[in-house]
Image 1 (cartoon, one colour):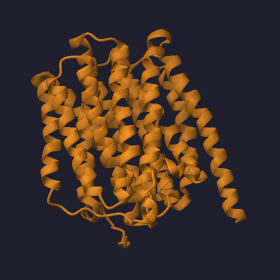
Image 2 (cartoon, helix red, strand yellow):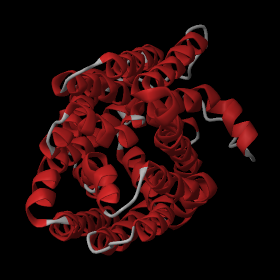
Image 3 (tube, one colour):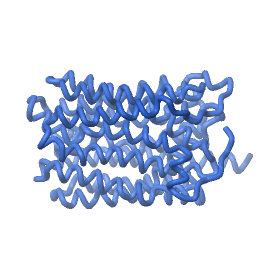
Image 4 (tube, one colour):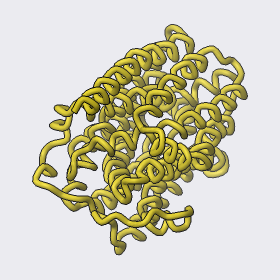
Length: 395
């Protein structure tokens, strides 16, 4: 791909890959609508806390499989096709949520929604990272801000829509957002990715490369708590005396730092090194996850979401840039899909385990378990990245 001059402002950047940003927002906003609706669905259809875990895990699992299998197609010259399929899947998932009436229908709906993320995410991130590699982390930081704006917009807007329109009306509105995006994108041209003979190899083959393994484990480590957030966050805040508005506020406050500082965090990673910023981000996130389990005030949980957002804005773009920097030529989307699958595998397992721990031992054990796992995998990441750096220096 021919490198282009890095934009100086948000407007020029948006003109560069603006259509991709719009697609990312449409897919994420339609997916995240489920977050404030989980407790309402549980109360209305009377399924257990384990049912919440099944709904959350099904989305993670479908996204995992789709990313692993279909991400390499973007490396073979088909990124637009993947994005269009993702938008249709998002529309179908939201529509099924609107008209569903049982736990297993909601599980299927969540699988369709998760598949939409798995189809579009790796291709969009790979294109953003390869658009201008000298500022890859900065671009990925901006993309992350847009994705999180979608993830936050869903719960926040959904929380306000559920009361006047009901669950069905709210889900239908978000499904229409994805459908409108499909119609807009259909006639547009999307950037492509560099292709080599290796582009046809399966994603899993990349694990033979130690830098890929280190980057994938780093991304997985930061993604571990998401399984708790997706399956229990709404219920946890409600149990502490909170409401749907507070749930929406936690997502909003988590997202604001990414919108404001995501690009700055990316520039910091481009300047200081993606590996260094990744390790620092993991080290700072672990105690924060642990503390969540011992907070009894919903408003304090809301405030801590802002702190976690600031940490994430300064570390997650570095992790995504690390993945892009170690990916071989012609394997950019496959590398993003592989690491994304690892993230979702961790989140799937955590979303199944967390409700059981929460129901049996309470929030302290639940968040403590996640923090402990992060400490183990984070230590492994630091050691792997250090030995990789030493090997490069020796070479």
